[in-house]
Image (spheres, rainbow, N blue to C red):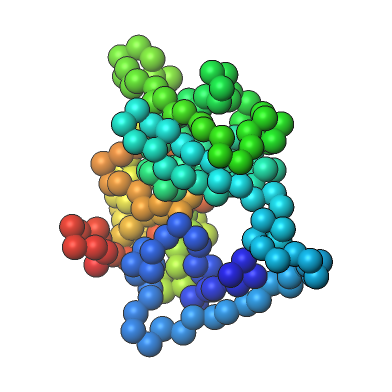
Length: 224
């Protein structure tokens, strides 16, 4: 499985999303398969741990629940936060991670550098949101909106917005400029569907990030 790359109309199908997250996928759609070269394994490698010596399972503990996550020893603290965000939708900006009573506050460090090993337990605390005092002032962000091939011929649209602007603000800006035709749209950031009423800051959007836009809406029954 690790050697497979699936794509539709030039868009790579990313792990962590369901097929319903790609509104361009309909009955009869062609899915392209590309095989990455696989490094040869030793004849005595008879199990997954031998083939992937850096892979390990760790436990992520929240206040009322816990999840198991497969990670790589070379993953950074930042990439671990991104995996938690993908699985649990927890905003990255609100996460504080602890291991063995010590805060993991250096995002660039690898898990093995922090002493994290197979079956380690990482505790997640969520920072409280105090908009009146603790929330930093608004920042200007330079972002890129990338459309699918079904919209504007896969256009790349650079924009400047404030991080306190909502996804709906972004949508209305694109519609008002006639950059996008009048329709319903979904925005995706770091493999997650974005919520119209939440800010770019809430979604963890950083300067230079890319947002992907598809036609469609979200309902209780799924994506339309």
